[in-house]
Image (cartoon, rainbow, N blue to C red; front, side, top):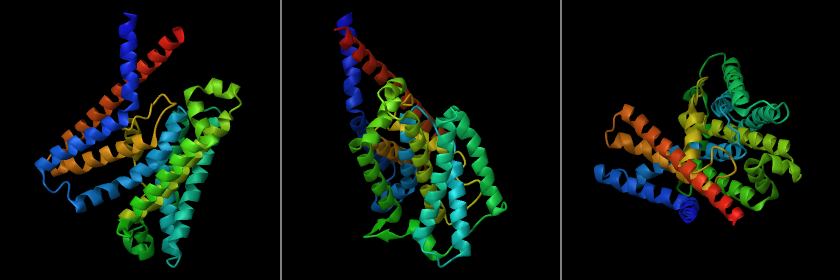
Length: 335
């Protein structure tokens, strides 16, 4: 009996090590099936559009992964995105000759400020992340309507240089894709090759042990929410530039899509584990579903159901794999 238990645990451990490979295989199989149904799916033009449309989601997924690793959640990112995007749009509308780089910097700065305040509330005041982020979501959304006076900023109010942030390209590659790649490289290095990156995983794996070992728990929590805010601010500028429209209800509910991308990518919702490669694949899978299902004439109602089913299966798989890995670790300690 004990041998069977160890075998099951070992299997779960092997699955956890090659989870990204399995997800990649699923993406490839899904793409082939869709291509047979609609020959335009794997065209260069459609693939470019799909990756471009997924870029903002993937940028936000980086920050959400950091938050979830530390056993937190951030429901305010859609509101932060909207606030940063609105203020940036109003600024370039008032100063059309402003260099777009300053608009990007302004959005990031606003996001960092929102994230820093949120991080303080969670780390220092001890408010539960889901409560703190839910409250701040309404505050940030209200501020967006206040600064805009309840009005929209439309395309004709934005200079062409600002809209080109998201629509332009460098060496034939869209700016959104390039920015997403740069963000992934930066945070891959940060998480895997810096002391702070290792501390983030330690805090999520065992908060009490992390405190005892001298890791600055509160500072790490503050840091991840601040970084999440900065990425949300960047995404806000990119969003407004891409769609050439800033509204008070921009990205309402988008935080759930970002969380879904993380879950699909294997980020453990209980904290302590998650990989950059995983959230890339999770974001790509969501992008494929959003792009492919309409192409094969799947009803919008079925689209939501299919996406929900895949997310639920990913959560169940994560739970089973984690249970197996934990069991394997327990058996080894007993041996």
